[in-house]
Structures are given as C-alpha cells and as structure tokens.
Image (cartoon, rainbow, N blue to C red; front, side, top):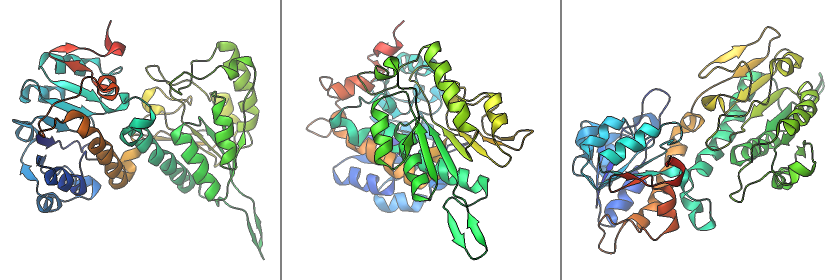
Length: 376
C-alpha cells in the first residue's frame, strides 16, 4: 500500500500523523511512505529523520498524495486537496464532521473514503486507536502546567523558616480523560484538588486520584451517562442546582479548569461573569472547550483575558499541539494500530467493512456519505 503523510502544521497545529518510528514500521511491513517536506518540523522530527526511516519526501501536499492509497493526517487538510486523491483512496484525520460537514461532502464527491479518527468506537478492542483519549490525556496535563505558570504561585504547601505557603486550590470541571489527567497532575503538584462531572461513574474515578467530588447527586444525576460513556445534556433545572453549588465553590478556588464537551453540541456554559467576579485577583480559569463556544463567559479563543477584578481567563487553542512531539507520537501509534483493519492479506488497501471499528469511523464510501450522524 502507498501511504502519504500530510503537512498539517500551520497556525495552532504543530502535530504530524506519522513519526520516523511509525514510518519505519510501515516500510518494514512492505508499505511505501511519502511525506510532505517539513511535515514534522514543528513536532521536532526533521526531514532527514524521515528519509533515514525510509520515506520519500514530496515538495507539496498535492504532490505527496498523488497515487496514494491511504493518506494519514491530523486534520484532513484543505478539502480542495481531496480532488488530488485518486478515486477509492482513503484519508484519515480528526475531521470534525459535525462542525465541518462540507468536508465529508467534498470527500464523497471526490470518491474518497474519509475516516474520522474521533469517531472510532469507544470499545475495549479499539482503545489503542482512540485518539480522543490519547490527545485529551496530554491536554489535561498541559492545561494544569500552563495554569500553574500563569498563576505564578506555588502549588504545594511549603513550610519554611520564613513562614508557610498555603497550597493552591484547583477545581476541575468535567472528569473525562482530560479532566482526570488534570486532577492527577494537580494532585502530583501538591494542590488541594476538587472536581465535578455530571456522570455518576466520575465520582469514584475522581476519588481514586485523591480528589474530592463536587456535584448535586439527585435522581437525574444517577441517569446522566450514555451507553457509550459520554455525558448527557442535563435539564435546565439540574444545571441551575449545579451552578448554585459550584458558584459557592468557585469563589474559594485559585485555579479552575473546565473541560466539559458534549459530542455534536456547543460546549455547555458552566461559569458566568458573576462566578468569575467572585474569585480573588490572580486566580486563573482555563477554558479547554473554548473552540466549541466555551464553558466560561468572557473566554476568547486564542487569548488570555484579564478581567477587571484581576482574574485571567485562558482560551488557548489546540492543547495537544502545545506538546506536539508527544502528541504526534501517540496519534501516530493510534493510526498504526488502525491500519491492519484497512489492509488486506496481500498488504493492499482493503478496508474490512464487516468490522465495527471501520464502519464506526468511516464517513464516506463509494461517493456517498454513509455515517448515520451525518445523514439528514
């Protein structure tokens, strides 16, 4: 099979979909790999690294994908690039199809099979392919590190001859993969850590990391999780009760990190201006959902906003790219683990359409949009 690796780097994207390590693995198993020059530079992988691994370099993305059977990417690249692919070829990436439906339509028109890596079913067999988990894990860690840098005070309690430094109080809102890693990181740094989530299972997970769970635990809370493990949209009444509880808690916090996202919907508003105003000067709020509308009133994508009362609201974008090398390594391994399901016994490109993982992440096939989430 002929594989092509796009240069996604640009703007806030610094990751690459294949590393020299995975490229060497592909070539060892009989595939050929072409990669666009400079694709790995922002993640600290040089063109020479890829050449030594056995890849061929292409000057542009359009040249790179020419004749490719399968294209590996972070974002799928410009939809215009799809016309450069041969009909029947595949392309993988975090394609964000609910927010970017034009991409799936363009892929179908070009006769290209598009695989959305974020749609990989969250089943035990697919854990090694789960890009949402691998990338969110790093995001949660990085959010705490960034918050600590901006906060500018110590996390742990420090008892010295000159007096005692009180520990930072950190509150994590949303205890998914990113949130739990944020909890673990804040705890390791010595902060007094609390967390909240609408999913009942999160309570035990938070407690296992040594943090205190904060939530309105009524009957609705007990039913607030889908079969796939995602948070459900909560009622207006529950949101009001939870907001009242968290408002009093937030006022006492030094750092708040919000991670709440619901697939296919705008990010829920968790913190309003009154809550921000209740925090002391120097406090930090990190809104990790700012790209989907944000959990925090006043957050701005790509900016750090300082309020009149001295609270900094952090709206940085693309958290995995802030750790591009590690994020690329993990993402590339996710793709490598998916590849056998897209490869026939003879090594040719041949997706296994009987496999639930392939069916779960494929958006298009034979010129049509096939994914249920995208059908009108």
